[in-house]
Length: 593
Ligand SMILES: CCCCCCCCCCCCCCCCCCCCCCCC(=O)SCCNC(=O)CCNC(=O)[C@H](O)C(C)(C)COP(=O)(O)OP(=O)(O)OC[C@H]1O[C@@H](n2cnc3c(N)ncnc32)[C@H](O)[C@@H]1OP(=O)(O)O
Ligand SMILES: Cc1cc2nc3c(=O)[nH]c(=O)nc-3n(C[C@H](O)[C@H](O)[C@H](O)COP(=O)(O)OP(=O)(O)OC[C@H]3O[C@@H](n4cnc5c(N)ncnc54)[C@H](O)[C@@H]3O)c2cc1C
Image (cartoon, rainbow, N blue to C red; front, side, top):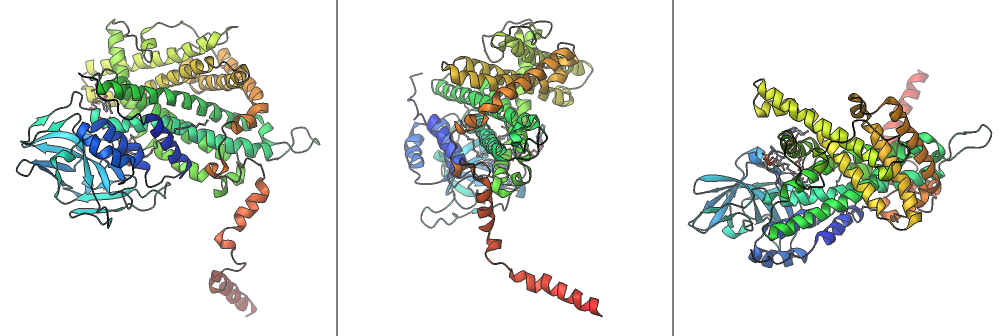
């Protein structure tokens, strides 16, 4: 195939623009989905002619588009989306329709009031046959009046757990006609006479989701590093209690429990950023390969992006909560910034593929590998999964005198992932031999399948962290980052200790050794903690936090922040005399009787 024109390389640009998504308007802005999903969809699913027409206008913001896939009744199971796009060869148009209440598009960001276009995922019907969900580029509102077009009902879905500056919306189509060429035609096509031309891979239309899943990994790094910055800075000024009686109150950051709560989030933030860069490169490379007709990396990209998305969002949600709790009462104030950061970050556990479903997608990939291993096949030189084919050491070696580049720790993670993967595969086979069908057996193994994915993703995150730190040449930076790497690795050992101890691979003594290495790392990180978070150079405006101010003037600014509350505009609020004052007066009168 002739070398396809290289699309505008917007990945870095888009990654940084999505970064702005987090920094400019932390809980989102009207162009969020336009930048993060509509443009990637045009880039990867529009044919050349469509790109020539849509991409410059999209990049120039001549319209705002969202990505309208999820419906009130279905978000995960795309096969059951109900919105239909039925081809009419007489007029060479598709007729978009929302046949049921549950087919109402529901959740798309910026759909409610901002967008005037949408990428709409609909079940494609032509010549009486359904060909599954396909993307269509549909105008929703008049470009001048911004009023919904004929047959379109659209609005905001109302207040949410967070991200309330994003107008997530609902959308219904009442037999809305759209030109044939509004169907994205890079992969699948419908010819003027209605004939359907299938894509080379039936999931290429899902590439925008893959992009966001890949981007979310760095997004979670961002959230963890932001909230660790707030927690470290506040803990470095907050004095509470004494360690040595009479020696004066200490900075709470000097408590080992405080370090054990915050520093692992810092370490995970770095680990996620490094893997986030890896997966984004893999995404970009895979999209380029697809443009050149090579779809071989699509399954690997899907499996890794699903697993990383599920694991990093879950750990980020837990980590942000740890940072909040580490800041006591002021951590519970909106002034801390934690409610805002947390409510935005945890949405990612759900959107772009609910985490359980994503873990199971990666598990599908792992089961294929397990089958190949059990069939005696050799690895296919794929660095992400080859370790599963290898036989590692029979026993854990993490407490050996020298562990060059943490090889022994990595082999422990590999051992657990290998054992978990093969054991659940064997159980799947056994259940089917006992008469269960594949789907039932799969469901009966689902929890263990998710554990296999988590163990596999942990191995990937750890190996990437080790490899990237090893590349650093500046020894002063390297030594600080190695302290965080040490903390990360041994913290992860303790996090998966059950699995390592379960088969006797690791001993209780080695578990104690891992804990010792954690406490050692905490001590080494403590003196550099503030400099580490300062080095991220987050602006106060993006931290949205009085506690995390770079100047450390928390208390004065906390009072100023409180005094600026509308409630404090007057000393006595109208409601007092109307309700409380009246109530107390009446009570006093009654007590005189
Ligand atoms: C120092 C300081 C630095 C700080 C860091 C700096 C950071 C800088 C960058 C920051 C960037 C941050 C940006 C973050 C982004 C934020 C944007 C947020 C905006 C909100 C967006 C939310 C939008 C949405 O939610 S869109 C809707 C999302 N919906 C979903 O995800 C639906 C989930 N369901 C599915 O995907 C499918 O239904 C699935 C996969 C569950 C099942 O697929 P299917 O229905 O086809 O059935 P199966 O039979 O299971 O699959 C068949 C087969 O296909 C394979 N497959 C499935 N999907 C894919 C795919 N996408 N690609 C490839 N292959 C796929 C699957 O593996 C099966 O294959 P088998 O071989 O049969 O196993
Ligand atoms: C903040 C936010 C922004 C969003 N933005 C967009 C957007 O811009 N565009 C868009 O199209 N959508 C968007 N969504 C929708 C989002 O993609 C869906 O909510 C998500 O895909 C989950 O689908 P669902 O809500 O229907 O949950 P369901 O799929 O109904 O899942 C509900 C529960 O059932 C479990 N479950 C479902 N299926 C399985 C299974 N096969 N195996 C095991 N467990 C299962 C899930 O794990 C989950 O716990 C957004 C959602 C949020 C929260």
